[in-house]
Length: 263
Image 1: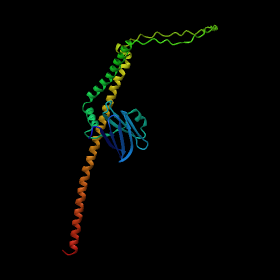
Image 2 (image 1 turned 135 degrees about the vertical axis):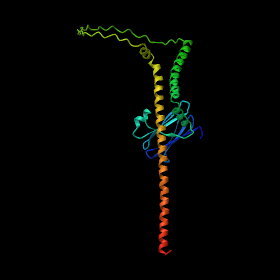
Image 3 (image 1 turned 30 degrees about the vertical axis):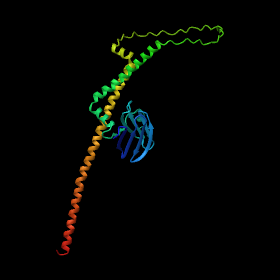
Image 4 (image 1 turned 90 degrees about the vertical axis):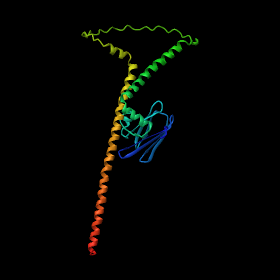
């Protein structure tokens, strides 16, 4: 299979969904159901959404470098889940494809995958801080010219006499003395750096969710393959039995025919 072509397929509720994605930057998506084309779309979005009123929708995810990750099907009634990117049924990538290799790596090395995704979130935070520092350093060394803007002379406004308002005797409420609660230092640190900690935590949580999704898909695929194998094994003895019964019936007919002719 060409590296520029990625194929997913799966039979869901009796209908076979087939998706073919061609291209690296601007990708062409061709979605068919039971051999009939549902839609064709071109986009460079890494989270492309293909929607059909009759067949539901597909969410196709690529990495920031254009590597195919997964294609998830959502039934027509799963609009909210489709928008959030949760739930749905993952299509099966073609064997030997980049998406299949990625799925196998996630299943075989879940800890390494979670670590890489978490470090990616941390790298995004550090990269943002470094970029802000570089911009501040450049601006501090660039002398901007002074621009004199001609502003009009506005007249002085007169002082308006304000009436003396009566003071309201508010009641004095005796508040109880609250205990002095000491917050742990690590809580203070997290509160002061939550904008830096949150992307890292989010990356870890998303990685755990992706690991669970991949394992669920692998278990469902294995169960489906096992069920197909069991059905094939069951149908084979039945076919052999039917052949034997037909041979026996043919033999009985031959015997009856011989007796009738006096042989």
